Image 1 (tube, rainbow, N blue to C red):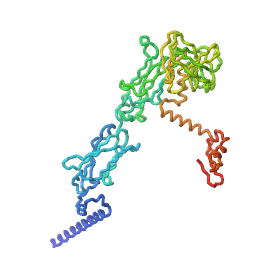
Image 2 (cartoon, rainbow, N blue to C red):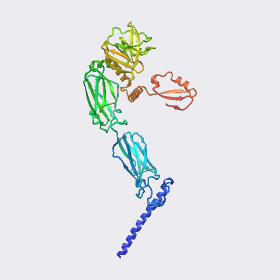
Image 3 (spheres, rainbow, N blue to C red):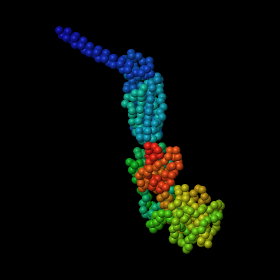
Image 4 (cartoon, one colour):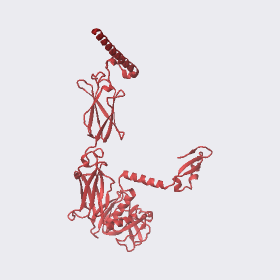
Length: 504
């Protein structure tokens, strides 16, 4: 009896295992017939499919040759291990349709890759190499025949590299800064690596002592120059990837500064500094705040040119270097420039001239008989006009200023209030271009000003009735009496003898 019961039990278990095997076999055959197209099937038969003798993406593995996180700029590689469904190595030299796609998650930048079959004992390994230059999070997708391999896609993070001084920049940079004696000023520095990545994860934000600042006075001879009294402190913010250099100068004058990282100058780290007293600062602010008015300064010209003709102008009677008479910028800009100017030559005796600074231009004039103006030079108030600061002139012992725009010959002037003159020009320039000399900051300033002007205008609709057959003539007739506010409105165009309208 015991043997009978045991035999029946074994038969039932064998029957169930047989049924399970048949169901799995039928499922594989149906899947093979339904899901495998002719291209992917190749020479594979149902027998190979039943035995698991085919390349299965889910059975493949991916191994990485580095540990997260890693710095950008290095040649990276990972390996794709190919296996049959039954776990046996799949020869990689056979066409497998391996596709690797690497892209930056935020910037949508695709990275080119190279594939190489490694000649290992099993020859089932494909090495994929690539190089990333932008820091951030990357998506690595590995597919075989359109199906993801193992746990694909993978996500890897690449950190920025070490700080490169030639790529590190000052935000809102100016070639000349105007500061007040004893008042601090903060410079924002953005450390970047070789590939222009902000170094938020590098050691540059933890080694503030590597940022150095050197300042020397412009003008006096080396044997006469003394040390410049200033204070500096460096702090950092890892979230914004910025370094803040706080600078305070305690002496008036013109100076040249250089910011270095590990004793190497950064990209735009060299600039000039004009330090004014509190009284001089108020004078400059008053000069700049007077819109549409030009301020003049008494000076001496060491470079003279022969000019042909200039219009008449009221003379500046009994002027001194401490008294400046405002004149409208419209009058200054409407004057005709001299038609011909010869190459300036150094003269023994300097010529007394008057320098006019307006929001748009910087001009140098001479007055004959104190009533006849003669315009000698005109420079635009733009970043292309550069100032060089020299020491006292040999005749009047006044501080010297060289103006050069790269087009006209340089002009050498000596003025008692040279620093106020230069500071007025620089503040007017900063006001015109939005507070920075970098191109992107200028674009942002232009767009911001454009939006502000647009917001002040009404945005109601105005109807224009035009003829399709005489579009130009009818449009000119409909808009000939438009004001500036009318042009800012939304146009509703109605075509004569037609039902439809158009709203551009």
